[in-house]
Amino acid sequence: MKSELVKPIHLARRAVVYIRQSTTHQVVTNQESLRLQYALRQRAIELGWHEAGIDVIDADLGISGASAAQRSGFKELVGRVGLNEVGLILSIDVTRLARNCSDWYPLLDICGLHGCLIADRDGVYDPGSANGRLLLGLKGTISELELHTIRSRLTAGLLAKAERGELALTLPIGLVRDPSGVVVKDPNLEVQERLELLFETFLKLRTVAKVMREFNHRGLELPRRNRHGDLHWARATTSAVAAILKNPAYAGAFVYGRTRLRKPSDGRLPTKVPKPIEQWRIIVKDRYPPYIAWQSYEKIRGIVIDNRAEYMRNKTRGAPREGELLLQGIAWCGRCGHKMYARYKRRAEYVCNHLRSHQGLPTCQYIRAPRVDAAVAQAFLTALAPAEIDALSCARRAQQQTYKAIRSNAEQQLERRRYEAALAERQFNRVDPDNRLVAAELERRWEAALKDARAAEEALARLKSPQAIAQITVGNKALNDKVVRLSGRLPEIWTAPSTTDGKRKALLRCLIDKVILDRGEHDAVRMRIVLARRSRHRHRGKDARQLSSGSRPRRGDARTRA
Image 1 (cartoon, rainbow, N blue to C red):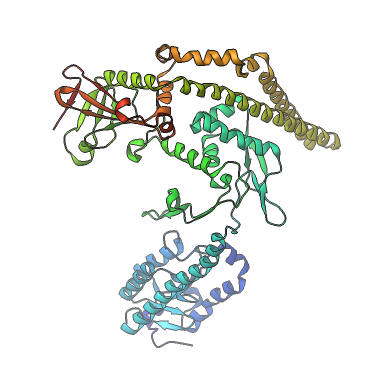
Image 2: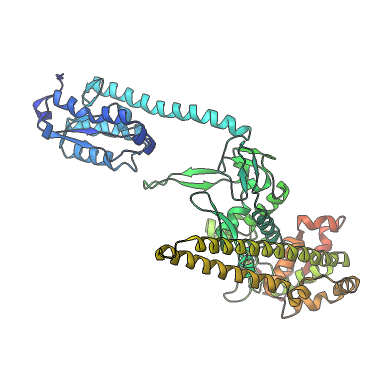
């Protein structure tokens, strides 16, 4: 059936059949739709084109029409229209060409400019005419609306299920679904205890990198899942440790909407960007069996955020480094309220450079560090009382518990390695000796399993050695008395060469949240120490001035610039 819109100028060019389906699943299952789209060649012949003058573009099969960024076939089609090669574009309907008006209208513009017709199963249209453009514009708008309607319909049921915490999301390692669909802890006790040990170790060491090094030093592997969902054990990495620590499912919470899609402007695929916890769409607590309490999860998340390297931008303290300046990351300007950074270039000093870097104004103030550090250290040591030293005894008891957990994990790992070695031996013994290719591979696996078992035995033997036990075991009252007597030696321990700058900063942060510095009159430095939240109850009733100091440096030790 011919159309009066088809002219000889159109027949002199090519007719292009554009074929697309949105997903690979549709390509495999919706074969009838594919047949209908390929059958459009016959429609082009009926409109007057010879079969040799018909091209088919099907490079976009399995790609969504929501955007043209990844559709090479659509880009080829637009390019050929711009080169006056195409007289007719055929598609089963306009939704195959575009489901986005920002892609649809430029196609109409270029077709109208170069006299290219557009046809679907309903008819032939001229984008260069007012009626044709109006009708095609309405079809494109309805197509875009249909996409949003489909999404809304699908999302509504999904969100309703998510709000009840019943949406079946992919579970992290350590959580599984039983045959009835109920989420339970992994029945493998080694997996359970390894995850519990990871959380305990982080709360003690407080950085992801230190946890990773501790696990690798102990020879403790982390449970992982391969692409088929099967359990395997692998060496700890910072990314694996961080993924476990930041997953709220381990705190028993069902969470939906933790990430958002960021679409690059250069046409690349969108990437997932994590949202702050305040912006998570749905949180349903107590839906999964927890490995840690929700309060512990929030504490861990706060520590991870606090340890971010770009603490200047995010206004966090950052992890304590090995630089000599004591207030690295916790010094704040008493004038503009922004963070001061440590500068070592000419001399050790704290500098507030925020106004200069963000507004082009002069440096707010910079203060020489040695006297300030000495005053803060003195205030810190004065604030510590024997009651604070009792925490060291608690830490030793916690260390003993950690040793027991590490030893239990090592014993379980040895048991698993022995089982794997025995299994490899049985597999080797069952193979036909004449089948050398299979026998050689099974022999190699058996030897590797025996090697892993020996390594696990050696690791457990080191943990059970008298030296390790003597290092970990907490003594009785005599040792506790010794710990208490340390209170009188705190200044000596603080200045000892064995106490690194990083350890001093870590100790300081146990009590102090931030130190606000300001140059007062006559070149005196006014200093206000803000206690950490977890330490405030121990100093309840104490005024901030009791933990503050004023130091009068020599002229030039503290300077400001207006």
